[in-house]
Image (cartoon, rainbow, N blue to C red; front, side, top):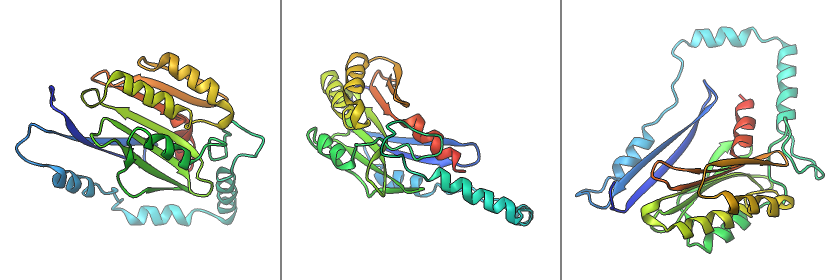
Length: 239
């Protein structure tokens, strides 16, 4: 992409077959003769879930489930949907890994101080969660937040910055500031101190069960993941 500014779109969706998350990033530099936004939307809209053509196989599998197995599955799902208790500040194996004391509104307030705005309507990620995407006007600072639709508490936040569109100081300040609202309330000091020390490098830490990661992208751009592994492990366990 050279020294030309660019505009990008980021799409995340789950692959139930192999328990992985797929990320698609499409970008357009300002030195092109044409605008490709409509083409990008057509590409995104063309992505469909692969259906199993052999419906008889699925019907046969379903018929093999007896009442006892169905009851066990129901009990398992109920456990997986349990919220944290008020006393528990760390993720549990069965509960939704919400960051206690965090809130979507606090994330929005912090992001707004850097000029970020919501780009699209919130995506329904299922199991009582949604994702909201925010970006600065030039696309240099971006963040995706997955939150509980019931409590509006944060499960995970992913920050991607771009070198040509934001300075190192701006990227560092943005990540450090956002880290204070992308963690449980009790852990703010521990998390922000660690992020402030390690942002701009590749490292990870665990605070009260939540995993936090700083990383460098392919062009040396700063990346940050708060609670992403906890959310991914919980999400894939539901399938």
